[in-house]
Amino acid sequence: MGIEMRERYINPYTDFGFKKLFGTELNKDLLISFLNALFNDGNKVIKDVQHLNGEQLGEGYGDRRAVFDVYCMTEDGSRFIVEMQKAEQEYFKDRSVYYATAPIREQAPKGKWDYHLDAVYTVGILNFTFPDGEYPADSYMHEVKLKDVEDNHVFYDKLTFVYLEMPKFNKTEDELVTMFDKWMFALRNLYRLLERPKALQERIFTRLFEQAEIAKFNPKERREYEESIKEYWDYYSTMNTAIKKGHAEGLEEGLEKGRAEGLEEGLEKGRAEGLEKGLEKGRAEGRAEGKLEGILETARKMKQKGMPDDLISEMTGLSADEIQNVAACP
Picture (cartoon, rainbow, N blue to C red):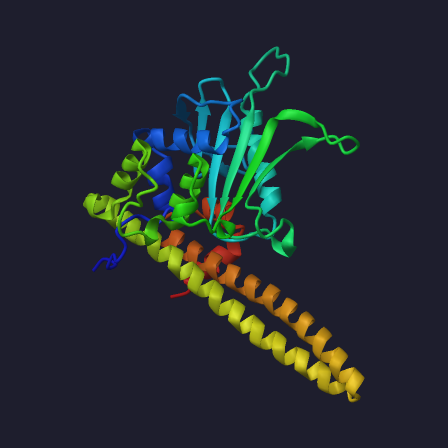
C-alpha cells in the first residue's frame, strides 16, 4: 500500500521533489527562472543551462566524492551547484566550501594552462536557520564572496555562495512584488497549497504547478515520491523526539543545580545558569542523537537496497564496522 497523499502539490524539500522540479532537462526552464530571480541585479542574465553529472569523483582511487542535488553550467561557462538542505549539519559551511572545489578542479585541462577559471556559484536553500543568531531575524538571503578585510572590497568575484534561510521568509501572498519574492513563496509553501495563488500568474509558474501536481505522476514517479516523503517525515520525527528529550533532561539538570546552591541567591543563579546550560546541553545531545539515528536509518535502507559499503560510508560518514552493525540489526 502506498502512502495516502493529502497534498495536491509536491514537497520540494524532499530529494525527489527538488530534483523533479530543478534537476531534469525537461524542467530546466524552472531552474533558469529561479536562478535569474536570485541574481536579479541585472549583471548576470542566464539564458540556458546544461545539466552536468551531479556526482564528482576525486582525482584518484579512494578520494572523496561530492554528490550534488543539481549541478549545471550556463552558456558563459559558469558552474552552479544548487542544494536543498533539509536539516542543519555541524560542519555545513565546511561542506559548502568543499563542494565548491569540485567544479573548480574540473576546469583544469591536461597540459599547459594559464589558470583562467570560469565562475562557480553555490546556492544553498536551507530549511533551517544559521545557529547562534548569526544573521538578523528579518535577513534571509546571504551572498558571500572573498573580500579584503581592510577595505571590504571583493577580492575575487568568481566564487560566490548564496544561502537562503527559508524559515525566515514569511511574506504573505499580498506582499509578493519581485520574481524572487514569488519563487521564495512558491518553494516555502508549495506543498501546503490547494490552488495556484493569484499572485503567481507568470507563465513559468504555470509550468511549476503543472510539474508539481502529484496526481499527474506516473506510477514509478509516485512510488519514488512516496518513498522520499516517508524518509523526509521519518527524519523530522526522529529529530523532534531527540530535541524534546534533550529539553527535558536539560531542565532537570538546571533545577538540580539550582537546589544545590541552597541560599536564595544561589537558587536564583543556579536556576538561571543551570537551566541555560542544561537546555544548551540538551539541545546539543538531542540533535546529535537525532542525527545519528537518522544516519543509521539511512544507512540501513541503503544497505537493504544493495548499495556498496564504500558508497554508504562516503554518504553517511559511518565506518565499515558501523555499517556492518547496522546491516545486522533487524
